[in-house]
Length: 389
Image (cartoon, rainbow, N blue to C red):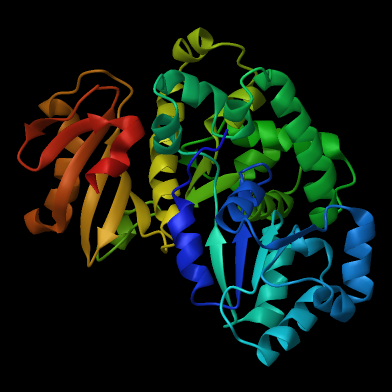
């Protein structure tokens, strides 16, 4: 079953402007399915096969010339030598849309791009399914089902898959393939504990020393491992916004697991009822809402103008979308009903930067339909926060 992706139009637009387009993102996000769907007549080769990767690495020039164009090269990071020859082939013929490259390891991939393909390729950073994409395909969309199971396409195209088995396999593959290749981690059990500690801190300010202490590693190691999770699309770091009153603002980023299903699996939840009874529900709801917005902007191929705002006095707005120095502000509340007293943080932001600074304020809740709360502030459904932009 094909689930329509919002990335399709962006990928087509990039392929009309650049000789090569790179689609990157976490494993199993749907990169291969997307490029093969958008370019059904293109030649396809996967470097996930060691023999094919060896051929591309050892004889890159003949490898490229032996395939028709356009050519899809899957998991291109497994043949780093290929990038230099791609540059030469592209410089010979700069016709747009000749190469479509995919990769899961953003470190190796972006290194090859910056060294050889800068200015010659478009880059599309991809996440897994958004709630909007799931709902557009399945009429019986249930928000709690999406949050609990996450957004990996295979869990929806093949409903007979047990999510627990799938995530267990996914985690083992991620640890063995990506983490060992990037970091050469000696003790994968340490990294596994690190992943679980990260999941339990979703929607919280990132404090490396605390994270490192819990796992039993050095703070610098924690920083390195977070950067790997970020580069491979497993976590998203939301930076704080500060202007003028910076001395009174928190300056550490907030950490979000990119997929709520994976986060819940790492935290050991077995069913949704247990999630709802847990104090983590608010943080998981915030993770869900923030990642819907992140996925929206990534699908459009746009830089993500997203921030959070928090003062040393504890005033906080979960998400700011900046537009020309003004904001669309979003608060996340795991509740079916909200009232004017829930607008306190939004009003604090408006007071700090001026009434005209707030384009619109939203409280993303479990309400089934939008409604106004006060002047310029509305309550909207959390899964479909993107519909108001």
